[in-house]
Length: 97
Image (cartoon, rainbow, N blue to C red; front, top):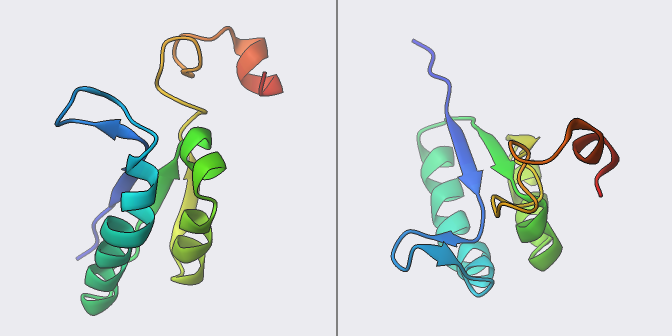
């Protein structure tokens, strides 16, 4: 049996309903390491979609996921309205502005 598993990695806090840069450090040092260990234990591979913002804050997150053999995907720069894929004009999405 095969499953498609995708994981979004970003700085949005469901607890506070806002973006918080401090979450990036927690993801790197706690959540992501725990999740990678869990996936390894069950021999599960996933696609991790990172926002550019979290990669700018903690680039080591991508290196850890890649070293564990998972697929890396882009989830836009941010979900904030002025930077989200679904609200930017196509040319701005392509150029990375």
